[in-house]
Length: 192
Image: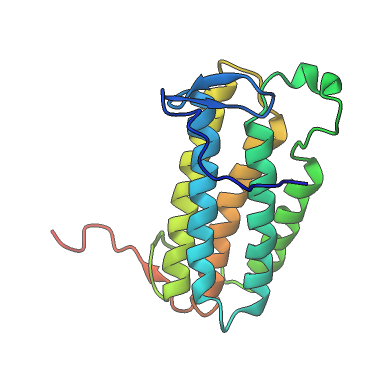
């Protein structure tokens, strides 16, 4: 259980922060950039949920996603996966089941949509616009996680989860646009 009775500790005043294993790194390290962007994504998802009043199913899915994003942050903030067994407690890592749940939800939503015949512009309903913002922040978190994985060990399911999640946001954005009927289509060269 987490107990936070004091919010400021002053331990980060010199530009370092603690990781999940207790080690200290610079606040601008690749690992902190990756899980910090996952935290940003979670905040953006919270904003999207402010527009789900007519979409109870999407709101419930977004609530699960927010919890999964905390799991992902816990995973990314703990380096040295090889030492998980030495932790003295179960280390939280992303699982294939979390990825598979996203895939099942994407498939269920996509079954309600007509195939795309054009790229779509982010927008339409307020919820759709927020979900597209979630998608772009998710893609950045994915890029940062993949960059981290090129220099340090990262759970393979972490980057895979982010990749599927960005697809989830795209499809959910179409659902929020009247099942794609209110999508804003890109018209190539329209303003030349």
